[in-house]
Image (cartoon, rainbow, N blue to C red; front, side):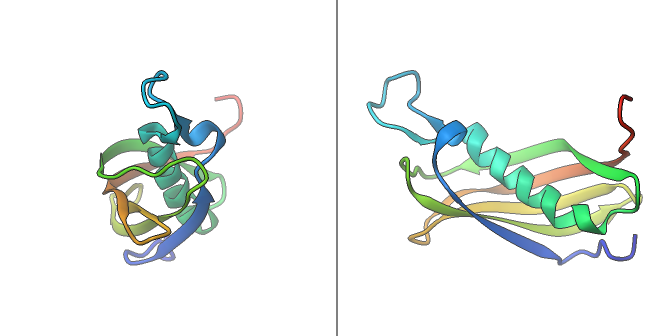
Length: 124
């Protein structure tokens, strides 16, 4: 597992659309990036960072998310999700720093995310 070294990073650009949106039950009158959508993009970026480096037959799953959604972006905005691997513990616990930034440089969300390495066995 030597390829999984703290400090590796990945960024992914995305457009705020589709399943990433909420209008807070119609109370806003327009659609914005939902908190679950933001977290999903953080998680995906972390998972995709380590996936090509995992041993054969292994995958990662979410274990913990601790983030703050500090600003909003409307439908159609361009954002970037960023993940940095900060720690590898017990050969299977992966801790990341994660954030989402708007195209204009504003921080939309920031926090930490932990994934656990598991055996990727279909049907189990």
